[in-house]
Length: 211
Image (cartoon, rainbow, N blue to C red; front, side, top):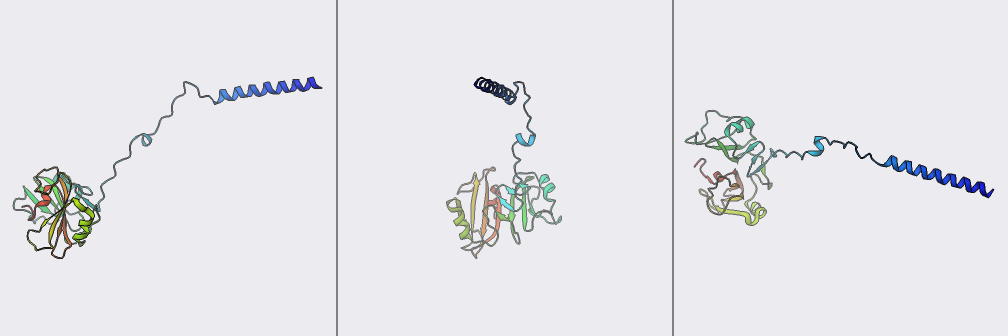
């Protein structure tokens, strides 16, 4: 009886060993296996999100980008709402108008065939990237920007009217001429509240439209 048990046990051990070898061979991947190809969505970087059409920045508003050609602007927002209106003494050099498909209260400035400034005025509901719009207080704007804001007296209105400049790049506390500079100007009225907002290149410093 002891011999039979030993033989059975030995057989069982041999069977288990053989099974173990088969399982290891099955689990091993063949050396010449073809790698699985990733789909384009798995390998390509995420697309850059489009600019928010409801937030004004120093670089533009939605599809309207500072520095783009007038032709591209018209393709995005349409031509002037009033074809007979003249926005500057020399429209071919500098012109201002409200594009037909632009948000309400939004005007643009075109200089030498390029978009240089976007202005929020009248009944505009658009906000800046800091969350400010028409009617907000100068104090709130100053607190939000801190030391990066530059204030100067308003040219035509008495204090507390003033102009608040926040340059995103290329600006300074003196008159800026670098065409690559970008900033936002909050125009403050005599009630201490924002009455207009200008965003774009150094043209935001112009206080009489195109001059």
